[in-house]
Image (cartoon, rainbow, N blue to C red):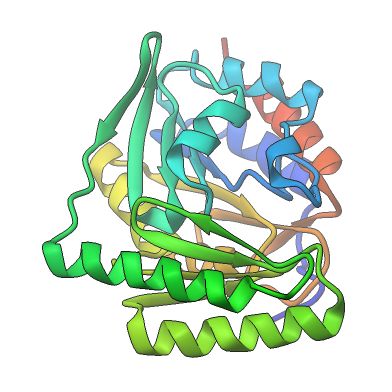
Length: 264
């Protein structure tokens, strides 16, 4: 991994891609929290930066360009907060959920759990709640296929203890465990952003993929992409990505430049 990706700036990389007629079909796939929206202590307050709404709406009007959000959020939360145009693909719960935005709502791929998975999910919820109990600032989110232990608001000692307990719980009851920034997600289905992004790419026949994300879970997506794709780490930290944006503001500005440089 490299802490300082080399090469052109993210702005120049995206403008160059817009001007390359051979880079079509193009899939622009983006994480949400920390990438389009500044991180918030209360996740329900996350919103895409206002200057990012118009570039995303413009991207889907260009022939040969598709837009996707790839997030750890549950699909219904992602749709409610993201402010993306009809035609956008939404991948939620790190790949376990998928839908496409229409003018009338979401066209969802239905996730069905077996009886055994449903029972395990219920047990995960009960035991995750026990992990959070008595630890201020630790709380549990329920998803259709997973439970998530959040520690962003906790004191460091409580956060570390809760994350360790959640990881142990995931080893016992989960099919997949993801340890991100101040979260441990335990799923009863195997899912990864990299696999979900690869599947969408193949479905669309995308020749080039842009992917931007800020968390350790986004490294799975960076790893799944190739040398001709554009991978962007938002924020500090070691990464497999070949480009870096300092923060969501720089990322959104680069998306605006991409949209403006695409041929009419």
